Image: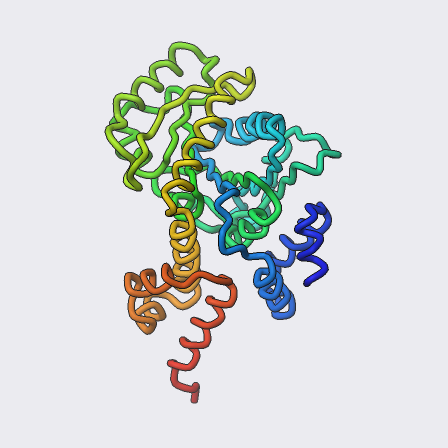
Length: 321
């Protein structure tokens, strides 16, 4: 694991692939190795690196927009890591993993790494091990972008996982009432209307969103901008990259970034515990609210923390007859 951590620090692509595969492997030996690896690479101060979440409905152009952003970031000599989550089939359980087909990156450019993931039936737009994978990617890259599956009106896990959440809206996808009903305006730090080249319908959607956004984001100290882009024509991409950078700078200057990331990890742990032990398990640990507050005060290795709570739950259960 020390050799793997050193290779990750050097940005070696095979090492990054190996580390992500290790995180995604739930067998006991792999989990022990992944835990040891995270102990070596988790940095107490990773404010220089930016974790971006990109979400929106299916077909809005998230992957094409990601590809356009990669070009801008690489032009600024930033190393870029992508975690692209694709939906899994409810029938076969498999996934096409087709997001990378739209991300035409230079195969010999070691400054870009794209990893496709299956959602494996998870609701919320993400995959189970996205957070530990983000910790690996943040160790290796300046910018890490997580692209969710196409989300509907209730999936908002990305808001509890990334420093900056960007929602991409489809032109003609509804009026301001529809956006309010979907809860769209409560989640993102940046709103983007993609496919600006569609003309009047894109302009109308931009106006609807702009008129619906009022005041600061619930996080505070940030007024949510509404931007227009065209991923195919490469318009508005530089402005989007600049706005993402501005939000990251605001977070870093406020000194709140590490506390936010502890909250991301706390939400990830809480969801994993509830999935595996149910609400009864959370009650044994003091209840969801108390557990979330407890986790937010505990920086460290998420796999170690999860194992500790597993042990507490096992010790609290009476032995089987």
